[in-house]
Image 1 (cartoon, helix red, strand yellow):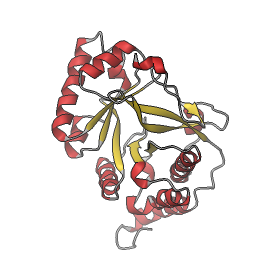
Image 2 (cartoon, helix red, strand yellow):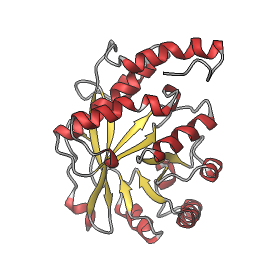
Image 3 (tube, rainbow, N blue to C red):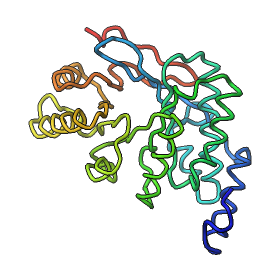
Image 4 (tube, rainbow, N blue to C red):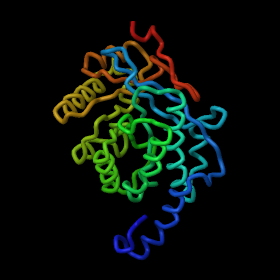
Amino acid sequence: MIPINDVGADERKDRAPACEQCKNPDGLNFDFEFAYQPIVNVATRTVFAHEALVRGPNGESAYSVLAQVNDDNRYGFDQACRVKAVKTAAELGMQSLLSINFLPNAVYRPEACIRTTLEAARKYNFPTENIIFEVTEGEKVQDRQHLLNIFNEYRRMGFRTAIDDFGAGYAGLNLLAEYQPHIIKIDMDLVRGIDQIKAKQAIVEGVVLICKKLGVDVLAEGIETKAERDFLISAGIDLMQGYLFSKPAFKALGKIDEDAWV
């Protein structure tokens, strides 16, 4: 996948096994499924997207699956996740956008590693323009420039991109200054109790203003109360995700709680 003149001998040695696993993502010794959680547009009261959240084969926690991911199977796992997320979404008849988490440390050349996703979208008749790629929660980014290269390549290919957990860890203003995704997802720690905490209100209002100037949509995740929802609406945020609207549905599309609109 990587031309021999593009990298040094040591790098070629390190990357070759990873590329072979990308070609053959079925060699995992564990199984997994997905739960799908709606992302809503509160202004139009519609489902904007569904996020694919990894779960164990019987609905076990994401941790039960991710704890089995290591340097030997990370690449195959990332590829298998993309394929299964698209396949299941198509089987469920998803009409909204589909948000797929990806592991930046499992991508060596975006234009090559994306092939299985494109093949899955064609095979299962799922529109590629309906796919959002977001950095998976908790993934430690080892190479910032590499992440930027991935995002830029995905944008060039026509995919939407999102920075998850904005305001936590790597996902801050420095990253936003270097790359403007289609969407940033405000970290749920900033959302929790925002209707009562002035400091959180000021920070989120500032982020909304910055993103408006940059042409970036803001999505607030982890909404659990109507008071949080109402403050975020007043701050100019329309895209929301959280238990107030719907919990993730295992191998199904989450249903919106009608009371969440009231």
